[in-house]
Image (cartoon, rainbow, N blue to C red; front, side, top):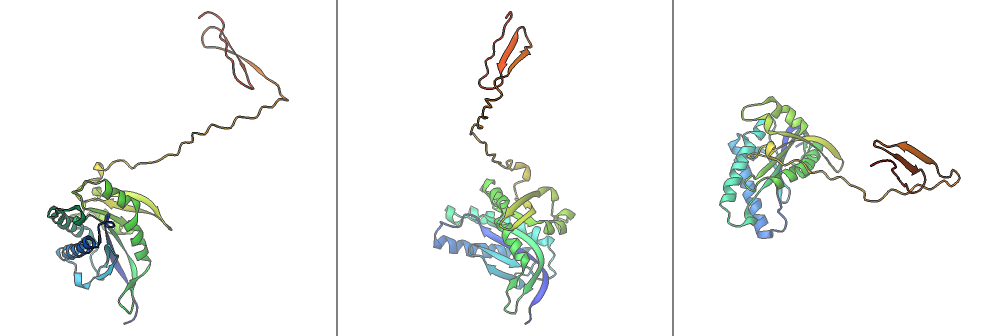
Length: 253
């Protein structure tokens, strides 16, 4: 088999806060996620067995078959996955086996190598989307009943969401920007079951310096200059330009 370059849709999913749960919970959650993701693909009419699947440790990367309708990866796939995760989480009595995920979507020319692996720059962009702060923040702020945050590239949005295909509401997506490693990009965020209007405003931090500005060095050669200004009331204000100001108001109160 020779290397083949093809335009493919790529999806990645990662379990939120998977570390620290222990190996038993990690393995159980990995298996549960793969089962639910495969079922979501099948319900969306995408051949799960024809997909190329790569293990990400606590997640999965999926390269869809060539000619897959990209819109089906948005709807119904994401909604189906969210539904399956909600059902799963309701059946779990312990927090370590409840699963919430970040999902990333992109598309582009990738290479199917002779060994069957997938390579190419679209996978690098997909990895940045999966780890992007807006996706992490949205899921962290969402109620526990919201199990999915979706972040897709501008390219994927332009070819799917913006057209308003059946089942896809463009108003449910919010444009965000992010910088991660070498990538600065715009992307589109969606949290199924939680509209963007419900999301808190993004927090911004402004560094305020409490350091007092350095005092200007006096120029003794110029001496002191006396200023006389009329006040808005009765009286006159006398001040000195260099050094401390002394203000005396004369006249009637």
